[in-house]
Image 1: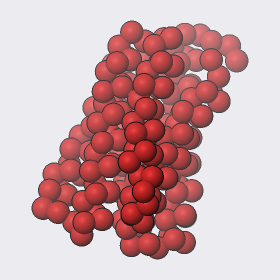
Image 2 (image 1 turned 180 degrees about the vertical axis):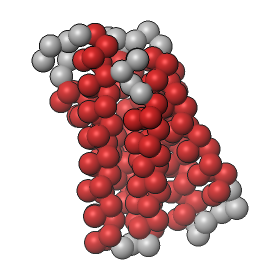
Image 3 (image 1 turned 180 degrees about the horizontal axis):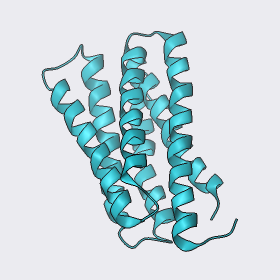
Image 4 (image 1 turned 30 degrees about the horizontal axis):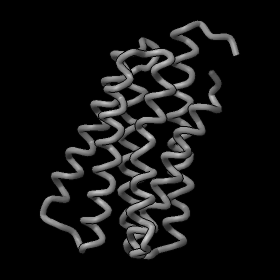
Length: 171
């Protein structure tokens, strides 16, 4: 187990999300295939986490919902906004909260006070990226993607440090 494994997973989440957002906003034909690849990531995370936690399927369910809400928000924004955007955002933040709760229940070193703001920031940055991609503000969405990469690295490090602490793993 290395922190690089978790960084790779979280950076894949950010990377496939970026590709999806750009493809969806631009109407590129690969958007559906990229979405399918993005939706494979919850399984990849679960396979990794099952080494340590039998309840990793709960994380899979929550991460899949997080991704689906991202996709739904991207579709909504591309279509000029829909009446359900506030409900989507509210549910997306609720799922972020549920992920933070799952983490804090699963590993005593994964503190909700760390996970909660980090997940909220992930949602906030992703929503911002969705809007910037839809507006085709390339310079701004590239800057936002840099922030998104930093955010997922923070999440990976929180997760990795918690596993190391929980299982007394020496790097």
